[in-house]
Amino acid sequence: MSTKLRKGEPMKSIRRKIGLMAHLIMLISCATAIAEEATKKIDVSQRIINGIIDNIYVLLPALIGLAILCLDLKLRWNIHKLRVKEHEERMSWLKQESIIFDGVSREISDKVASELRSNTRWAQDALERAKLGPYAQTVFGERLNHFREEKATLCEHFTPILFDRCRRHVDSGKHVFLVIDSGTTLFPFFEKFGADAVTARFNEEDWMKSITLVTNNLSGVESLIRYGRVQDRHSSLEIRCHLLPGTPLPIYSALTGRATNSALRKFAEDAGKDAKKQGKNAVFVGLVTGNWIRISETTPPCPVPLARGEGHLEFKTTLISCCDEVYVVAPLGKVFVNTSNRELNDALGFQPGARAKDNEPYSEIDGVDNKMAAKLRLISTSRTDKRLLFAHSAVVENALGHSVGETENFVDISNFPYGCHLMFPFDDLPDDPWRQFMTEFPHPATRKSKLFQERFQVSMSRPTRSFQDRF
Image 1 (cartoon, helix red, strand yellow):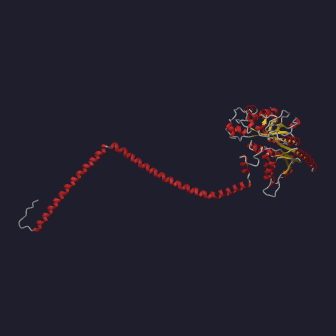
Image 2 (tube, helix red, strand yellow):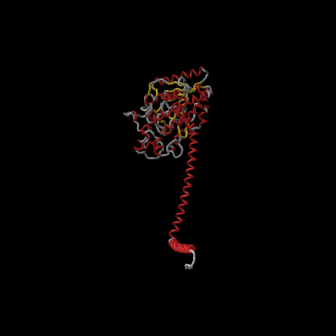
Image 3 (cartoon, one colour):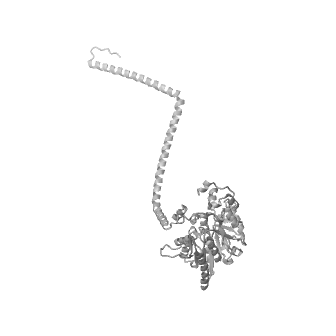
């Protein structure tokens, strides 16, 4: 563009042209700058692209990993939200359930507390197991925990059967006198008899009024007083009971001596006369036990109780002579077969003239002949296969022969006074062989290898002293 001034051109036009030229120069400069900057950016972008292409083998796994991480974080966050929601729902449900069960739990706790206050047997059992009970310093207290579960089983199974038989005697016009021996084996029967008498009273069963208990068992009568009456401090026993007089024998918690034996004979004589005056017959049913029991060689074979202690054996002999039918109740581990009285004491290590009372020999009741054997019946337990006394259980049943019967045969009084032996299945035992051994043989005298292997058919070695001390 020519900037040559024309002659006579106005100044205003000249200035306009100069301004246009200046703007044009500025535009050209800006265009040049922009072009240079674009060129630079293109170069940088080219270098970036080239760098990406050159490092693609590193960047691609990184990008994939970053994508995975993002997805993982998103998934974790969703899971967290679900858990929070579930937790909130669970807490809401628990709150609702706690409101529902709050009233129920209070009612249950009140009833449990009331039961524990009214029935303190749980505390008594705990004290007895800890050897802190009222009989702690006696032989009775020591042996109360021997065969504890088995004795309870005998009581629970035999009592209803015995009462069924007694009821049939009552229905046939007889008055039944249950003569009960002392000892820990028969101790649970007093609680059961008392509780059943209370139940019979509420059920308005009059037949129980024709049964009278006769005993020398002090602890048994105490238990009967506790459980044999309604919850009224002025109430009397719901079953008749006659406690024989005599000399207290603390170690067995019993009354013994001549006075006791004479009183029993006199009571039996007078009761028979009184029953006849009422037009009835009296039947005396005896429950007896022993420190040990052996199966006799009589015909039929019968259980023979053994005992020691002043007046102890004499009372058992008197009881058996006064009763029409007698049931010898004993755990299976106290029953010896094919063993005489002398052999039994030898096996246990007890000899005459021993200084310690615990080592004095046991004696058996007198006059066991075929006639007496006919009214003596064993009430014991049996064992299932794989239990330590399973073989011994079979030996005892075999020794008693066909006279081991079923419940229906027992309650049938048509063959009076000949009942049948009963052996109830018992399996409430530890599975561990050593603990089972200590349960079946609680007496140290029976833990001799020769004794339990030969007399009880148990083929195992003797437990170590340290293991025995734990029991």
